[in-house]
Image (cartoon, rainbow over all chains, first blue to last red; front, side, top):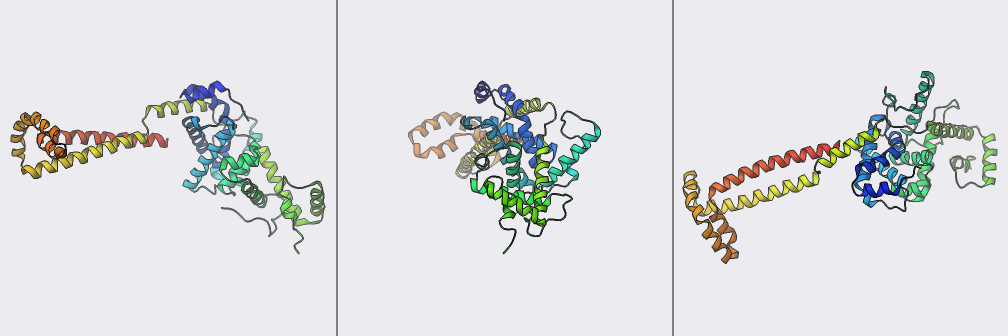
Length: 194
Length: 178
């Protein structure tokens, strides 16, 4: 995870938006990525990431310097996305909505490779859309950010054992929903989670 | 007994398996088509996730955030607007109470209101002096001492303030949602 300079934090605590802007610059990608994985489209991810940084700016006095700043930010982002999904009832995302014309611009490879990447991203988002809100957040935190069970639990306000069991269930769901050439999933495999 | 137990769980266990458990799991996977299929599916899903990488926002994200932050900082928050509206409401209630006392005490007519206004203005200072001597009678004295036309002015001002407060509240709520 990215590290920040103490003076940025001190200035940001005094309400300096330029200082906090440096923090935004440093953390925009991980925060945006979490929002994108949670919400499934670039427009919502942009809004959620902007809101996450605004909430962090407003609540920066509550940040405990003993904790990782990145983990704190991701926790705000995850809670915000979960609330947003709850409000909009976007548990299931259609494949079309996951294939926007102006996708997030990473350094652009050739058209064929780009199409493959887009398909891969859409497939991943389709997989994640099968998970419940909290489970999706846990999978993203675990596999994109290598967060420990303890960190995930603290970020999402639940116990370590709850994180372990829900991640286990989420893996089962992902395996069951994964479209491969290996044939249909056996009947005993995990049920779909709403 | 279900031959998949405990392997159906072990496939998804990334932390607690011992070396022996892993060996047993691999042995079971070689023999069991169903568990092997689930294991491949999970490995495929896991690989897809790991290869997905990080998505980046469109260029200019930080500038967009700064512009939004400046806009929000310049706009008063909904809490302030609520306080303003509440204060206006309380002011209106006090005014209504005073007006009620005034009209019930003197009998209300529009011509009477204006004719009494001039004499009441002159008596205002005297009435205020009385009010200081009888604290318990404050409401009644105040209501008598203020010329009725002042109530009309106050009602008008409070209405304007109320409308402004409402606009302020709507604007700050919209900004908050953005």
